[in-house]
Length: 312
Length: 270
Ligand SMILES: Nc1ncnc2c1ncn2[C@@H]1O[C@H](COP(=O)(O)OP(=O)(O)OP(=O)(O)O)[C@@H](O)[C@H]1O
Ligand SMILES: [Mg+2]
Image: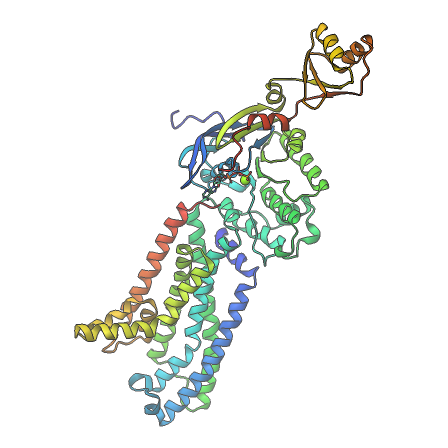
């Protein structure tokens, strides 16, 4: 690409990670990692403990120097953004405030450095519901309040891109629901959301796309449904019956695939639950359980990262 | 400019600065009382009893000493503020937020230097105003006149300002080189406080061993000694000219500042 040419992701909030690598003394925390994150969608960043998520996000934000590779936001490295806070908001684990400073003053310090009006501090506090604790010192904050203050700090510049490292950490159920709605709304406005999390059921509700890494390497990237659908089996029906042999025979006659789950239940694929029930009725087989099982993100995640999830 | 404002706000919104401010005020008050008593004794004919002679024994020399009361601990306090401005970022893990807000790390360190210099100036101004008000009253009452038109007095005030500026900047430099709060504070205290006597002894032994008086002058390479040489404004057979001390201190401030910036630019924040 020549100098004058704009990269395809310029001006948008697209995140491009390319060949990113971080070698620490004893561990290759991130290993030749490449993926993209599209604006207008919520992208979940998943991986077992020690997979390299935090390291990747910190390299993306110019806090950690990559050993190799690049990471850009809207076509530019974070260090080259003219107005970083107005472009990118970030909530990182272990981001903190001075213990003796109040929440409001913490935000005002950031506003001053970024050239934002001090009134933004109060607006951001109101946004995350922290106004009542605005004048209390940070050391008196609960875990969830600290997390909310971090989110408020990220929102000060009304950014185009949000990057969050386990933001649900410490939030109460109400807070988690608020954040889900907030991030979805944020993406709906055409902005970019990249969020790492271990809460896979929450991710399934929240994310449009997922990037799954393990041991520093990319395992899978794509829309959530597609990643779930790519697994070996699709929807299955779990059946319990005292006459397993008869039912298995009857189902196989109808071209269904039948397995056992090893705990006395049958797993039927290639047939929906009503048809299984009807087949059982026709064969005069007694049923004790009949449930549809959809593969979920958790199952897919565990399958994809099996054997790569040890702490390094 | 925004960054300097932000750095000043960081200091104003914690209790560190006024704790150190109160400390500096108390130190100034105490030092003033001692210096006033000393001036009274020296100027009423007891100079020999206190080992004070030459220019030091003149009214102007005593006035200069009085008008810079609190300097010894004041310099320590401004250096501590400089150190804390940097190490607090790591101790309280605010470095992440700071460098997210301003990815250009050199600018961050430079703005800390700017804010620290302003603070150093503020400390100098406050202690000097206190010393001048109390000092002129005391000297007039004690019958020596204010001495405010004397060059040794002017020189002492200006060198005092220079000392405040350099030690504050040195504090920031030490903080960037040693981000560990406790480590930086202890190192600085050793450089400033413990140093002098030990260094004088070391250089004295060295000069005996080498059989050379000139070697003793080299103790000026030690920051605390350099500071004293600079502040004294005059040389003796054991110390070089004041500007040598000033150059040594400026050198330390520059080197620590430059290396501090280089290291900070490369450091992983995690
Ligand atoms: N500063 C560091 N020095 C040495 N090794 C490090 C450093 N930071 C991270 N690592 C190592 O890099 C690997 C990846 O760590 P990272 O924090 O990125 O994982 P993660 O995916 O965020 O894990 P978690 O889900 O537990 O937050 C780990 O093996 C970790 O021990
Ligand atoms: Mg992590």
